Image 1 (spheres, rainbow, N blue to C red):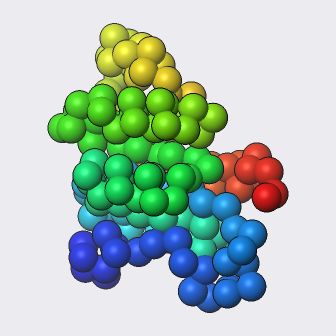
Image 2 (image 1 turned 90 degrees about the horizontal axis):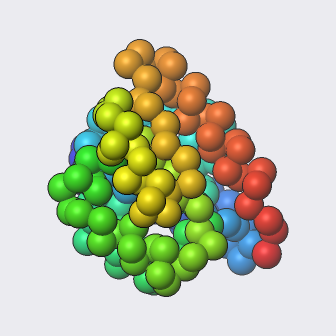
Length: 151
């Protein structure tokens, strides 16, 4: 799958049009095509791919959030590092009840503390092994889907 195809993957209920009026969505924001592919794979395995919207960067995420506020936002810490805290601030001020989860490579207590100060609900360390990463994403997908109340 090309990075353009991955970045273009969007919440659309393409396979289940009957869900369009009732579906909830999880927005994933990452600039890493390999990471996006892992997320799409894990959500597909969990049979929740129709609930995943993907943005390949901060600007695209901001447009997606304002057009269709997510029920859960999952951000790659690198997006925050590259773009600054603006995206977190946008989500927090515009949609204060949207939980924000961050995946990170950092082990710095200071960096992680700053994320919580900015309103992040949970911070997860990225597993090193592909299968461990897929399992973690699939577990989070199930938890996020189960915790999102129906409309």
